[in-house]
Image (cartoon, rainbow, N blue to C red; front, side, top):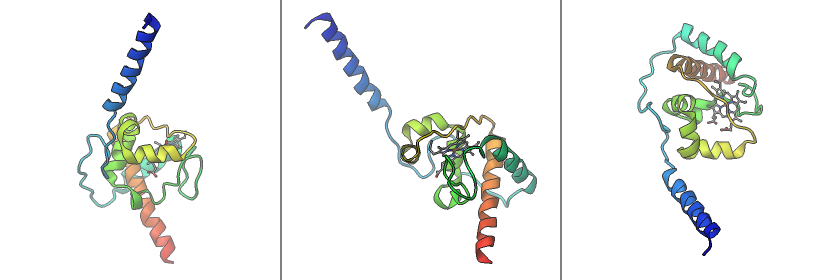
Length: 143
Ligand code: HEC
């Protein structure tokens, strides 16, 4: 085999090793530091911070009413665990590579979710807003 052939073989071997490292994990809590979250009754002032942050950083792609370029998040917590949401927001890259649910949603949409939150409090405030929205939605539907 010539030199190029060896280089090609090495290339193939490194690709297969790489895919072994990216083991897909299936957990309703996702991957990250949030394993168990104790949720208290919704804190109104934190929820309002979450609402403002959502308008600023998320609403260009997500609405609470209908599908935009990103999915509707009004009933997010009907389909995802709060721990999963926190891991999704704060450990996005790893979730995108290894979390089975994140990979599946990502395949359904043409664009990617752009979340670059690093502040745990900010992510939690968004979670509070999503929790509150879920209640508003149920109240509205109960009318
Ligand atoms: C540039 C557009 C864009 C922005 C900005 C954006 N997202 Fe997304 N988001 C998407 C798209 C597209 C998807 C679905 C595809 C994917 O997973 O990448 C998604 C998926 C999600 C999901 C998963 C939904 C589900 O059904 O499980 C959550 C949660 C989410 N985004 C929250 C947020 C939050 C919170 C922010 C703001 C901090 C945000 N996103 C900002 C486009 C965006």
